[in-house]
Every structure is written in structure tokens, then in C-alpha cells.
Image (cartoon, helix red, strand yellow):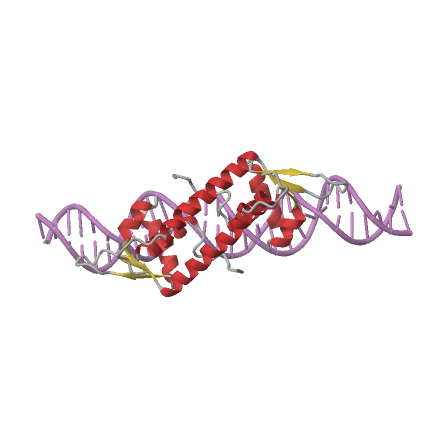
Length: 103
Length: 103
DNA sequence: GTTGATAGTTGCCATAGTGGAAAGCATCTG
DNA sequence: CAGATGCTTTCCACTATGGCAACTATCAAC
């Protein structure tokens, strides 16, 4: 408990990016782009925010060095897990109705 | 599926407010205030955003008419449930690790 | 090598969101 | 009535966001 919502992760696009990366280990930026409805520049900035926070690592891996690959850092994984834990805390207070309350 | 994140609900303070209201049916504003670290003015504005969206209903109930009580509208409950469903979709893609991935 | 396409980043700008302080309003309490 | 209380609103400063257009770097074709 006492997990905190992480303002770096919370905004919707970055939350989605992190979720994809935690699930997918290492992904091409273009793959992420297809799943978020964002212009290239906006996406680039959201990713940069995660990189600046130390949550995401950027590499140019393949034969085509224009392409960027992303993965979570250990710190990023930890922050994401904490964030999700905090979300669960907040939301679960919801789903356990106290007796005598008429929802 | 295809549940959408609701930008009215998503920001952290409003998410907390909604979670409290969905859990607690009708709450005094002051009760919410104690659980969020926000100035009176900031809280007032966040609540106003939820009221404007039609998600929360404000009433002056007790003998002291200065005090405001809050509850979710049916629409608000629906929106909140949708939002939480969307969050689960996003986050659950995470917690089901595909085989062969080293998280 | 030159040309044109592609991947991504950055600067600029316009807009929206947020929060606190302070003033304002209505109401309650003594 | 005077002062305290609960909440709202106005004002202002600051941050965040997104798109466009310009830019860099690389690739692919010839």
C-alpha cells in the first residue's frame, strides 16, 4: 500500500506506451505509433518524457538505423508496477461495497 | 472491450474523487477534501469539472446548508465503470506475459 | 554519388489544464 | 451584529500538450 500514482506514467498516452513495453519487452517505435493515435512529433515527445525520467531506453538496433526500438528500464518497470498498484488501490476501494450502501 | 479512457475522469484527483463517490454513494465534500491533498479552490474546480460533465451531483443536504454533498449520477457511474474497464484492458495486456518474454 | 523516400526529432506556436492566493458569498454560531 | 466557516470564483503563473513545418540522418534506387 501507499503506492503513489506516478505523474510521468499516468497521462493516457504514456500509460499505454508503458503497458505495451512492459508486456512486449522490446518494441519498435513504429509499432507503438500504430497503436496510439498520435502525430510523430507528439509521440516522440511522449517517449522522450519517459526516456528523460529514466523509465524507457531507446536504441537503434536493426540494420536500418533510422528505426528506434524501445524497452523499459528496470527503474521504469518498477515505477510502472508501483503506478498500477496505486491504481488498483484506488479503484478497488470502489469494487468492495461497504454494507449498507446503496450503489 | 473497446472501452475508452475518459479524459474527464482520468486525471488523478478526479479519478480519486470518482472512486470515493462510487464506493461511498453520498459524501460530504469535506470528507473528500481530507483524502486529497488539494487547496479548497483546486478541489472546487475539479469537482466542478465532474459536475459540468454530468457525472456528479451536488446538493446541500444537512441542516448546515453551507456544506456540499456529492454523489455520482447514473451517467457518472457508467462513465467511471467504462473508464476502469479501459484501464484494466490496458494494464492487463501487461500482466499476462506472453511466453518467451523475459520481464 | 545523387535523388527521393523514410524515421524520427526539434522549434515554434497556440491552446488547454492545473493550482494557489485572495476576494467574494452565503450561512452558521455566539 | 460580528466573526467564523464552507465553498466558489477570479486572477495569474506555470506546465503540458499537440500539430505543423523544418531539420538530421539514413536507406534504397538508379
